[in-house]
Amino acid sequence: MANIYDIAKLANVSAATVSRALANNEKISAASRERIQKIAEELGYRPNLVARNLRQKSSLMIGLILDDVSDELSGFIARGVEDEARKNGFSVLLWNIQHELESEVAALDFFTNLKLDGVILADTTLNAVEEFPHLKMPTVLINRTGSDEESIHNVLTDDYAGGYDATTYLLNLNHTKIAFINGPFDWHASAKRLNGYYDALKDHHVEPREEFVKHGDWYEESGYKLAKELLLLEDRPTAIFASSDMIAIGVMDAARELGLSIPDDISIMGYDNRIIAKYARPRLTTISLPLYEVGMMAAKTLCEIIQNQAHKDKQVNLLVKGNVIERETTKAIQVDSGID
Image (cartoon, rainbow, N blue to C red):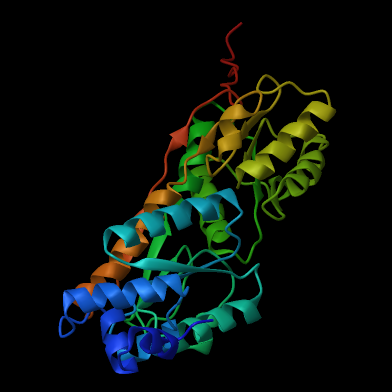
């Protein structure tokens, strides 16, 4: 691979002149800069970012740590981060951790050594930030809790409100036997949605039932298995609130397998508003999760910190609320008036 010395030899200038020309230093004439940059391009020269960033005060790059960008929801976050970062003149370096703590620690270590201007860490139960109690770069967390250090800022979806609103929506359809299939218990989102579910029941004077609350993972198989347990109860629920759309898809499969009609025999509500929600049959009622906007807000906050030294004296905590998307998997049930 070509280096600045190869370029200097062809351009018949010093390596220092090449370095300044590639950095668009105005001490080098425009004609010389153009000639040297053209030679660099012809040689396929790629700058050493680590070396460059050690010399410059800004890399114009931010890091984004995601669990798995191939997941639709993580993809929304990544798009929001990239679009907003680009508007502010920053590039984004992405690291998928595949839910491995060692990978997240490695990402933070690499981004720190690379002298990036800041980092965004998205939704996960991992806590690698604890390995870096004094991060040397601005940090924004998405849908996760971190240190109380003033340098750590948060953008959160309002999962408590989502759990509360979903349960209230079903209660307003006259359902009182509402089951809840949650994601992993140790996720921030799971705990908040569960609290919202319980509080909505309490506010409507409905006693929660222990057998109606299940914990699994976020995916279809978990929804299918746990829904079967619920739907085979002697006194089964009339509605199931699933903590993700993928769980809800599994619930729908289990209901159909047991010969139940959706929504006549069982109402089903999801969470996330994934693309599949509007193409499922029947179409899935769900809670929207504005993750593209969340990604944009996280990037905007980080760019403000980097560019303007904003938010230095106060931790930023932004809360983004979703809303009910009413489709075809939920239905009001008849209430016996007691009048013959």
